Length: 155
Image (cartoon, rainbow, N blue to C red):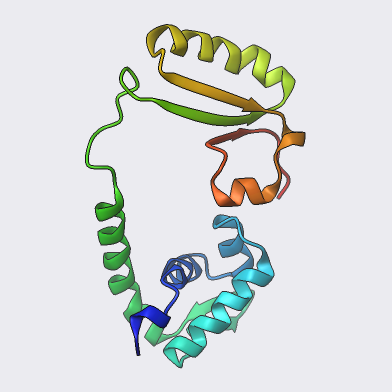
């Protein structure tokens, strides 16, 4: 099998599926839809030629193949996380960055505005873009274009 043909995100999904033992819970944890997670599980089953998780009494049970893959997947994910981390520590005093925050008007005026005011006096190169919930959709949050979302969420 050529690694170029494998979506490596599937390994992240499998790791969470094994932990959660539920497609719905795994989807929720990864901010995916349940159908998207079901599709990922189907692709994983095809990739490994194994059911990986089977239904059992209200949850799903990992197969022996899935359990044998788990330590290797965790090791690979830790390595990937380590090599993708920035090589230097974030220093707000010298950083030139804009943080995008989504919050309602009340949170903005009571919590965020005082925080931003304090940060701007200490870190003049750091900027903040505060958006209302109506300015943001779920796809923005899934893509990671919002750094912080403060709101009441159902789920």
